[in-house]
Image (cartoon, rainbow, N blue to C red; front, side, top):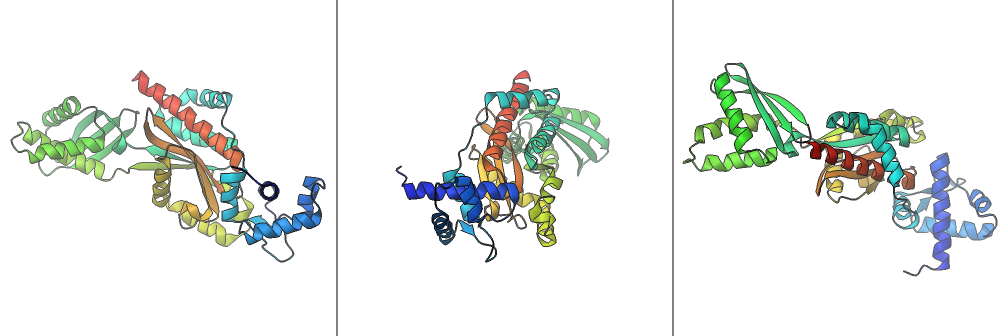
Length: 350
């Protein structure tokens, strides 16, 4: 695509405004841009181009006497068109792996540590969309009676994800019957996801001639109840104090209150992230694109991690719109690759 000289100049000035605003959190004036360009453009030309950027909706002047700051549209144009998007280096991924290796055999600790490490490196708040047993493959099911009508159902997934639920039974269940039900589930239905397992049991219930009908019915009742309160995904947040301390929020109590409200809306944020992670690439959402009430002044950069072709979760940074997008993109993509490698190694060991 051919880019005209005027577009190159315009994009360069937008880039300088973005970089200065990221560093200072203050509106950027034409005098500062002129100094950075070292007189390659006249002050009058710079003012004209900044006014043009404002007419296009890419920057805005908060006050009459102030400089310009990027708008949501300006941030998006910068991310999509102007900025160079550095890829993570193999060395960077290896460093992440070395720092996470001590906890790599425990996926829950691994993901928690990865979020904490990314927060330290990026100096931003971070999130991990963690898989739960509901979307994972069955490894083992244990059923332990704790009273005549209560059974502890322990669900273990291939990624070493464990969930336990106390299930109330309509009919009494003995220890021998619980062992028999668990043996049936572990031998006949292993290799399915827990969601597929429920669907398989439901189909067998419809075929009433199944010789294991009573066992299937009891198993279905236990698992359906156990999984009914299990979320599809779990959100782990780290470093939220770093987000709260940013000038956008620390100097504005109203925005800080809205931010706290947005951080409490975990289900809405997970739903948005789940949609982006399906695309399997690095996702950047800016301002209102986050589509979570209270997070209009935030952006996130998210990358998936996977086992083979299957995306099982994601990791990313959550910060103010005024963030260093090129650096955040490289860090997040690098951590996503690192988690994919470590979790795939864990899967291979099993």
